[in-house]
Length: 360
Image (spheres, rainbow, N blue to C red):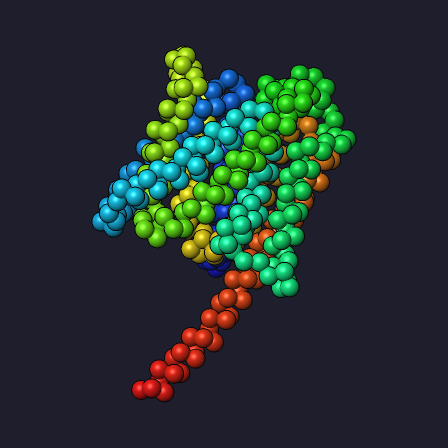
């Protein structure tokens, strides 16, 4: 009985860790399944349409059930703001991401997400939303971490070096379809297109995340907001895909990996992980959730190597280490900065309370 109670207590205390492990495993599955679908011939632009359609349909019932009484009024100005943020952060970003994924590996796609905190910090710095204090330790950590992250991404994408010895036995025999497409692009020099496109997609995603703060002040219903953005993105992506691909046969979905991928990305990734991350942020804060980002890279690299026979190079490993180190430097600097702000606010609040008591 005691063992069962101890197990329950252990589970309750470790629920945020379990949730974030599950989130990163889901994100790794997104990169792997998306790569498999696009490599099998699915148009990347059509993939985005179906993904956003599944996301809208899965989110809408939850948004209605949980927020139907608290949805604020939508003005024309606010609608245009949401429409524009959907265009930048979802439609263009996802189209660039999946187009780039068609020209690079799932492992790099997973690795590039480690850049997002550093890119967001740099953009916020340029827009004067963030401030950097070079003389302070946390300011130097954020600056150095951003530089290290960018260097890690470049090393991961463009530096190969020798392949790891324990992976050499995979090179013999026939490669899978996914691995062969990746090797084809890397051998012809088109490998530059994929990583650069995904890096630009991450920049746009960082811009979108910065845009959410002022929008959420006007429209704090989170589920309804993301549902609206997915709906607008579905319309935008449909127009985009219709202009790029007019062959109706390309739009057909069968009971295959294409249907599994778009349903997985739309329902599981967009809806389920969004709720899990919000819950984890409420329990442990945003820095805690970001700390688990490198796990998606590790899971993707291992599965790609064993299932798709993707070759792992020394340069990729070194780049991944730099990416993770840069990410944790940025997160550590941000955490120390937030702790400093909280400690500064407490004496101010105590002084205010004392002055009120004195006046009374």
